[in-house]
Amino acid sequence: MHIWIDADACPTPIKEILLRSAMRLGIPTTLVANKNLSVPASPHVATLRVGQGFDVVDETIARLVQPGDLVVTADIPLAAKVIERGATGLNPRGELYTAENIGPRLTMRNMLDELRSTGVSTGGPAPLSLADRNAFANQLDRFLSARARPAPAP
Image 1 (cartoon, rainbow, N blue to C red):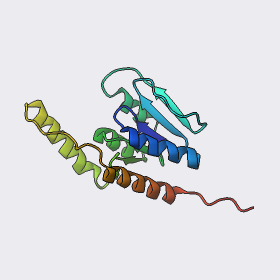
Image 2: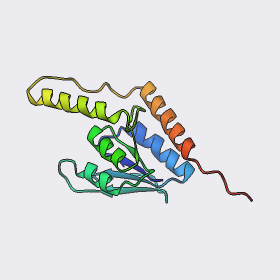
Image 3: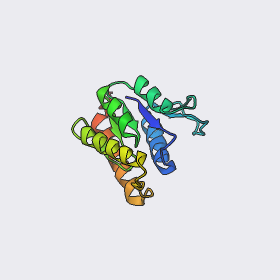
Image 4: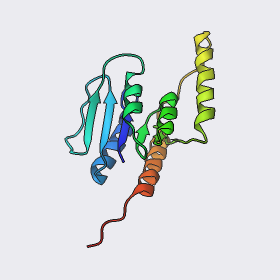
């Protein structure tokens, strides 16, 4: 399993939770962004800088993700691609994207995008709260625990 982070839009507290988990559990984790990122020195954490441009980060993650991987993103079209590839998407507010819920989420996102293109103000997400951070940490823990491999016998 590999954790991929859509790092351009991922809130700093969520990145910190992910990096601590990756280092503690030894899970390969890559932050993908179109700018340089600073991360702690760890054999389990890497950064991948991609070029500027619309959806370059998303397309890179979608191309590299493998079945069983986890992608942390708030981008619903990316989450849909991730699910198609057999991986799991996790929103920074703690919502898992699944084959069952991604269709309605994508439809709603497209409708709001269409409204915005006509000049309608649809607002934006609320600031990340402590409850959001806790929901994310709990969902991440559940996801990782479900995939934990038993320790080899001595």
